[in-house]
Structures are given as structure tokens and as C-alpha cells.
Amino acid sequence: MIIDSVRAVPILLTGRQPRGLALAIAIFSAVYFGLYWGYLQVPEDVLNSRIYHFGITVPSAALINLVSPVDAAAAIDSRIVFGSSSLDIVRGCDGAGSYFLLVAAIAGISTSWRRLVGGMLAATVFIYTLNQARILVLYFVLTRRAQWFTPLHSYVFPTLFVLAAVVFFAAWVDPRHEPASPS
Image (cartoon, rainbow, N blue to C red; front, side, top):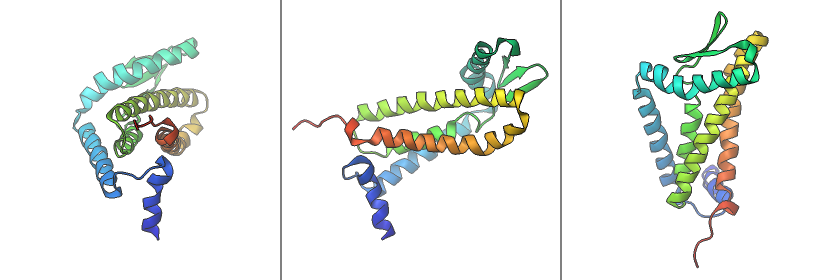
């Protein structure tokens, strides 16, 4: 009974028979673990001084300064520095986990290559934007309501990221967005 329920989920989400539950799970697992393994192979100094600096902290500091110029936030490697405090971006605080889950879920769906790539690109923009908003909120919480930082950072935002990824995925697999197949 449980197995039948699990098998029904892809049909309910996509409105069509999946490529096979075992294959979908195998693709999901291979993509997720492959992405995560590759992520763990990136040296910390490369993450901090290049990827996080140019991809996360510089845009975040610019956004903070746009919203609140008086705070004078600056990006230094993987840190956003303001006054005598800083917000450190470390492995795991970059949205990678949710991104890998979302991309792996998209990869497991049977659809055209164009739709797969489009979904993965949209997922990239979605998770990146969500993470930049998270960093902005965490910065303002840290500077204005520090006691809220730990619960938001440790519990609320991780949960919201997973929920947002599920909503994104459900919207992406909606059969109304599937291109019509030629008859």
C-alpha cells in the first residue's frame, strides 16, 4: 500500500506515467550525490576568496548599502563586514543544499532536454535570489535584533528553503507547463 502511494506521487505531480520510479530515484540520487561530492572537492580558499566573495558577499554588501547606506557594509572574502561585526558566509550557508536537491529532482523527471535545462537554469536563479534575500534579512536581524539570528538562521530559513524548493518543483512539473507533444 505504501509502495503504491509512493508510485502515485510522480503521476499526481506530472499527470503522466514517470520513466520508472527506480530510474527516477537513481537519477535523483546520482545527480544529488554527484553535485554534493563536487561541491566538497572545491577548496575552502577558492570558495571564500573567489566564489563566495564575487558571487555572494559583494552583491550582498551592495544590496545592504543600497537599502541602508548608513550601515557601510563591505565585502571581504566570504564576510560581510559592518562596523566591528561581520556576517560570515561558509560552506552550507550558500543555498547549495537546497539547490542540489532541486536540480536532482528536476533531473529525475522524464521530459525534454530543453525543459530540463530551462528548469535547472530557473532553479539556479530562484535559489540564488532566495539566498541573497536570506542574507539581507539575516544582516538586518543581526544588526537590529541579534537575539532572532540563531532561530532564523538555524531553523526558519532552512525550513523555508526546502518548502520553497518543493513549491518551485511542483510548479515546474505542473503538466500545464509541459510543451504539447506533436501528434
